[in-house]
Length: 174
Image 1 (cartoon, rainbow, N blue to C red):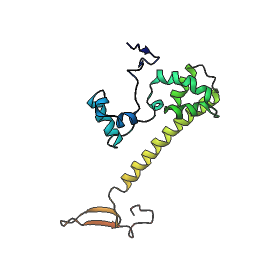
Image 2 (image 1 turned 90 degrees about the horizontal axis):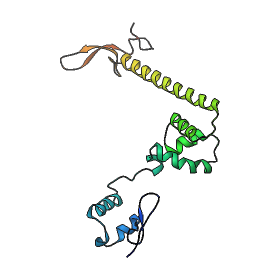
Image 3 (image 1 turned 30 degrees about the vertical axis):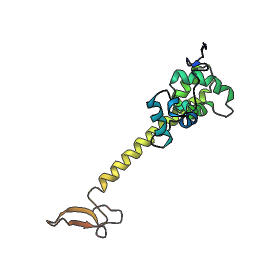
Image 4 (image 1 turned 180 degrees about the horizontal axis):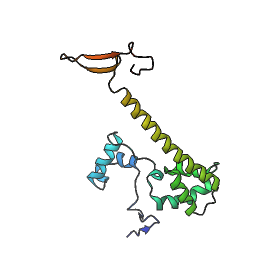
């Protein structure tokens, strides 16, 4: 009788429970599959009917990211560790700062303040652009390519009002 051994991840390792790669499973005989749903899932993924998942590091939760970050910190060669970590794990700057600090990494306080200021400036700019867009939409709400101001519509549905030539060059009403 074959004895299987538990590994770190909780998966059983041994001769009988050896996991096969997707290519091996697809090329294997149908009776070698463990279940019909597994075969169906692999066929759909292989035929392009199902999207592939993003890398595992982008799907991790905080506890798993912290475990993998210990190894990543030793291999990182960039200049700004906060930006590198946020790009690698797919998290925002604030989250990367918290996680790196919880791992005991020394971070430059000036750089942290710069990143926080840039985030607040970015949100202010986004709000300002949104307000400007709304103002533009309100300004030209009653206009089209022929009329700067549409006063109304005829019974046949044609607009009438002040044309762009009749108004001043900026488009404001006289």
